[in-house]
Image 1: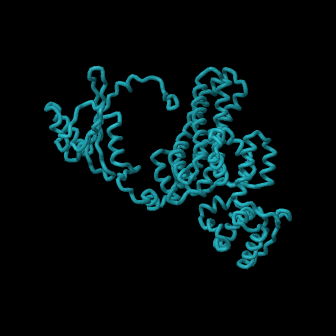
Image 2: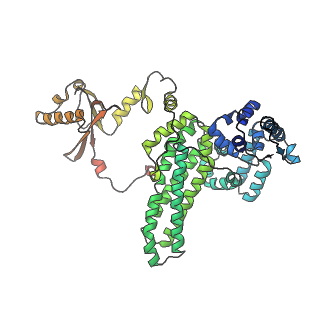
Image 3: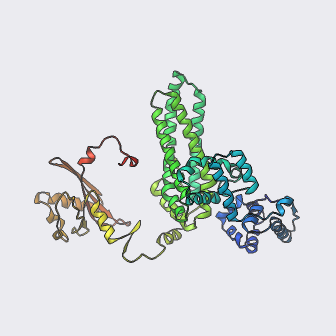
Length: 493
């Protein structure tokens, strides 16, 4: 066999698995290769030259060591193609030196330097880049004062700058059931929809006439509506993957990507609206822009974000992601496979890690002080009362905006005694149906003067289905009833 500086670690591991332990013992920097997930990510992009740089050793010496072990264990003759003479005597850049060089190149890019010149400079000074380095680079630039908005504006140029290296890296390959596999399955569906949209656009031509437009616009609307389901994919990233990456100090890349998500969502809404109008040229361009934006995001995910996440997150963190994904749902009706199962105990241990600080209440999805919890309950724009499993009033939210009066004397009182005699039978019937499991909710509304009051009774049950009591929620919905149109978060003033 032949060994060259460009031989990948994954190729060697697949052909000679014993090298996993050999290299880990040879250099502590290679211990990561024992992790099968990291072998599928770092191993795919790490050449012997890159590995030598990470391990702070000479490329030729590492090649000689690997060749010697292969011949000693297997008897296979190994031909070594040494590095260029100039490279062989050039000390590899340290991680800090690489970051300095990369930041200099990016700052020149932001200053308007020619992309081709910077690509050549990148090849000569650094040579390659990993997804983790791209994330660390963006984070370092933000930490040093570069606005995130500017990084977002130029992130496509960042990708173009490093595209040669990124194109040579295979996307991660994870078993069905792993969150990364599910993300990539959704991406495949999005790509197929994008191809179908491009085909329709090509079929109608640059300036579609009335006849072909009328035959095609319905299909375009349907495909754009289907493609819009990619929003579920983005919501899962934002609420499942991004928080854990931020725990590892990677805030800038996630914020930039979230902004790009928002742009794509706006583009999809715009395309759908234009397809209902009469401006065919604008609608056609909007659809094309949507396809390009979604495909660009797929590239960034599979070449940068997901490999970086696999390198960064621990097994229990992936387990927590998988266990929470079902609550948000999946795009395009994709369902996770079963080849990879989350280690439930690891997820639980990860979620429960650390003792609860004194004075905090350990809730299912967070920890709050009693003071904060009480203020939250009293400031919700609703009245709440809770009747326990024995039909005794156990709690009410003592807020200043209460609809119906309550006093502390009601606590411990049988709820039947809290209602007028004419409604007691109905209250009793509701509670009995809640306890039997026949009903879970009861809903009422009424008008008091100029106010519209909405009231709900909800049965509370534990995970085993045992009845815990009845929650009553009342709300003055007069204001909500009168709202029209929309006012978004950015318009709050």
